[in-house]
Length: 485
Image 1 (cartoon, rainbow, N blue to C red):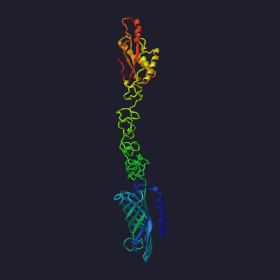
Image 2 (cartoon, helix red, strand yellow):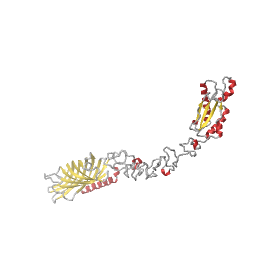
Image 3 (tube, rainbow, N blue to C red):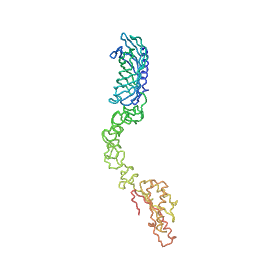
Image 4 (cartoon, rainbow, N blue to C red):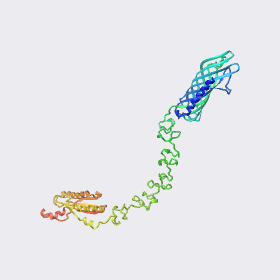
């Protein structure tokens, strides 16, 4: 029998080694509810031949258990053991091989009184089933060679020692009652043979846990079940937060310094809403627009760079913090009527019209009778006006249309407006910048350039009337202080 036990022990040892070396095949989390135990098993006999309960000598064997998680308090198990017992009192001796197959229930202290992942986990167990024996005995009455099966009942206690989510060790002692008194070859009608059974070995959790976010922490224990793929997590399944500022490392732009959430975990010593790493003035509260530096006049230029620190609110300023002056005439843009062309302050920053321009503004575009078409002979004049408008980019040109007295006042009013519009259309066609500064007005027959005696015939008044069929011009500053009368 010792040879058989030695072989069994060797096989069990190889299995334990292989399972230990390949723990990746087993559960890495308590959510995996099936548990396989492989262990060594020793029996201490008590019967007619001897009482070994308090002796050091034991007969060794091995065992295999398959357990299933039922609840935090209970596991169910199927247990198989193989071992033996022997004793010699000088007159009687026996050497019996014994196997058991039992179903059991385990009452766990870990999962209820203690945490399920506690290092030390005590438990109680009870199991019932069958014992298989091959008795080889020599007694005063003769030799016994008997094979039999009988009932068996085990009650015991043990301790589980947790190494990881997948691997644990255990030590267990149980009191094994049998339904037969012939294990030792002697039957004296007394108590059936009894044994103490001691088991110790390794347990492995099998199966695959539910881990929706694939972070290595099962959903049942995962306090952050929606962690993004690849993010490092703690034992609770939540993203690592090295600096403890409430911002996970994978979202924390300053993972080694405690900061605030609205700045992606970065510190802000002066509390101005600009992270210290981006703050050019980290010890003085400032504004986001000035990269964390103070801006007393609120012009968007930090005080340290502001050459005009008392700029009025709303004032448009340049990079130096001073009011912008686009045309460099000494009049700030917000006060300059003509910000794109230099002029004296007394004229609102607008240039004065030169003599050639004043003379040009006195020119007229004439029209044929009852016509609003610009004649070829006047296009050179209008081209000169286009050039002048480029010289005075901020000025407004008033285009004034007129008609002679022939026809009704209403008709002549409309005709004068069409003539003014025809001139504007030509100027726009020739590329006048900002056409909105071309303003048209029609005056009908109300402002004749030449007084005509309406009692004379049309033939005799043709020359005078031709002078009144015209478009005139007025160039003025963009504040629209134009002669609209």
